[in-house]
Image 1 (cartoon, one colour):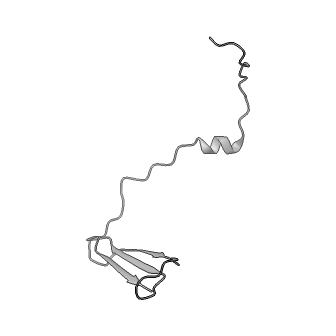
Image 2 (image 1 turned 45 degrees about the vertical axis):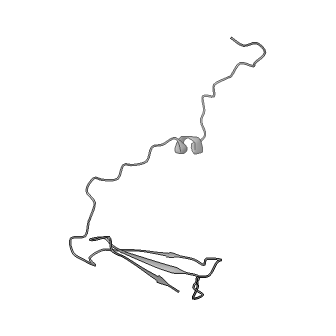
Image 3 (image 1 turned 180 degrees about the horizontal axis):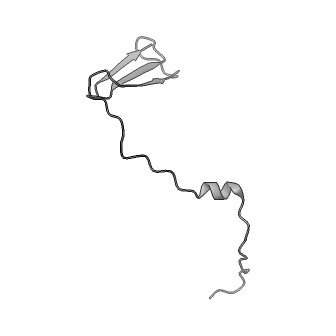
Length: 77
């Protein structure tokens, strides 16, 4: 349908990185552990150092989340 374009040749061999890139991820299991009591399972994260300090001079913050009721605590440092 077009003129002047070269024919595209398919490659039979595919490098290992390309094969891994096209793999689908393993599906997470449907059964996941959820806390049945307060403070039974906690998730935490630390963020920093942040270039812009807070009003009290903090450059880090710590986040705690209770898995049972999703209550969050944030501490600045």
